[in-house]
Length: 192
Image (cartoon, rainbow, N blue to C red; front, top):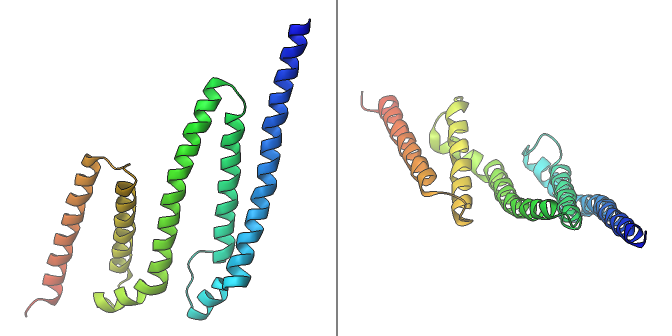
């Protein structure tokens, strides 16, 4: 009977730890969202600056989107730690893998948000002037997508997550796109 009582007490303590971690993660995630939104909106003033420049980065406010992403990452991190503290072997390994994936995903997400912000703030006007396309938005979107893809490939390569075959596929596709642009501009703006 003592063994059964000891096992029941051990299991109940693990359940309390797991739910305590999840509840703590919920509150820390909410506080993180409030702090990041306050810093971006009130201290840095990024929403007003983007509005003054007439730049629409996301569908909502920039500070709202970034703070929501940070809150969700905090939730996921605490969920992974709850899996680790469950002391069940398969869940511990799953929690470790989840933390590894979250760390890689957070780096990729930060880089892609910075690239998106740079494209919207600085490069959109420059690309429109360089491409001489006027009303043609398709070419501008293709170049933007290509810049996103280049940033993603460089990030994955930097984190050693990109295999050599994927890198070669990207290089071939990039070369094909450059040839396509060369032929297109040659036909459109060539000698008459």
